[in-house]
Length: 155
Image (cartoon, rainbow, N blue to C red):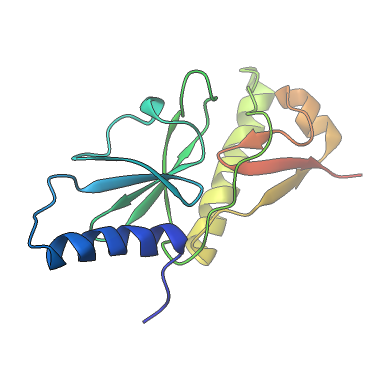
C-alpha cells in the first residue's frame, strides 16, 4: 500500500484513536491548513467558508484542496487532489482574469491543459508557463496563482 501524505496520516490517526477509545465520530471531514489541524465537520460545505490552500480530508481518506478566491472572502471552490502527494502551500496573489473573448479562450485552453495534466499525473502542476502577451491579454501577472497553479512568463 502506498504511503498517505501528512494530512492523510493525521486524519487516519484521529479516526484510529477514536475507534480505540470506543467513540464514534460525528464528523466526517477534517480540515488542515498546511499540515496543522484546523477544524472538523459533518460535511464538506461551500469552499467560501475556508481559506485558499485548506485541505479537507474525509474519513475514507479522499482529499480536496480549496482553490481560487482570496484570504478575505474565502476560496472559490474545491479541487479533488491525490492523497499520496503533499500539497504545497499556496503563495502568491490569486489571478482575476479579464472577461474578454481572447482571455476566455486562453483560460479555456489553460483549464483543458490542467485537467489533462491532472488526469495523467493525479495532481496539478506547480507552475504553468505562458507567453507574456497571453498573460497581459488575460490581465494576469507572472507569479499570480490560478487554481493553485503559479502562472509564470516565458522569457
